[in-house]
Image (cartoon, rainbow, N blue to C red; front, side, top):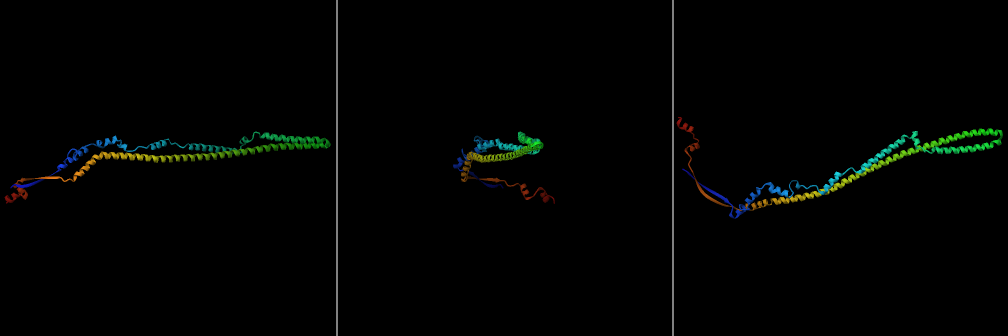
Length: 312
């Protein structure tokens, strides 16, 4: 016999008073469909570009101070004191070489001659002339006294004159030798003084070159410290500008997400409202199973029936 089955259907529906907020114009579902079917460019891309906050627009560029520092760094050259110091040091090397050259010719006659006074021989000649005049005076006095001494006086005068001539030549030779020796000594002193002067000049130039080098190093360090200070201020400028861009970006994103945020708020408000339920009852007839299905359910097949009844 057919089997009768009772069916109960339960339907859940939104209360009538809430339908405008969910399915009506401006409701949750239509608004969600409008918002969520927009593409990225329409929702975010185009507004960000219009505000200058798309891509690299969100990154602050170099601040004016940083740009100024970059220009100064590009134009920075080696301090001029370094070149001055090198040039001065080279002068010192040259002066030292001249001093060594003076010492090398210390015993060279031609070099010594160049340091001797060109008037030295005139001085010697004057001294010789003075000695000659003195000798002539002595000879004149002897000649005047000889006649009063008779024959022996003439012989003695001759011997005395001969001795005076020899003494005169010796004196003149001594004057010449002494004068030349004094000139040579003075020349060597002048030569040594010149060498010492070159050495002193070399030391002075070397010290001056070192001073120039120190001044160049100090200037370079001062320039770098100044640029570091300016760079720190430039970093502060750029960081402040970046914070401004971040704030503008965040404000714009809040504005763009505001409709979705409101939609989520509205959805949260209506989510806890109880829904109405409607139900209906019905029946369904189920026909009885066939004989074959009953046999199959009992595990009896044609082969098993044959074995049971026919294969005896």
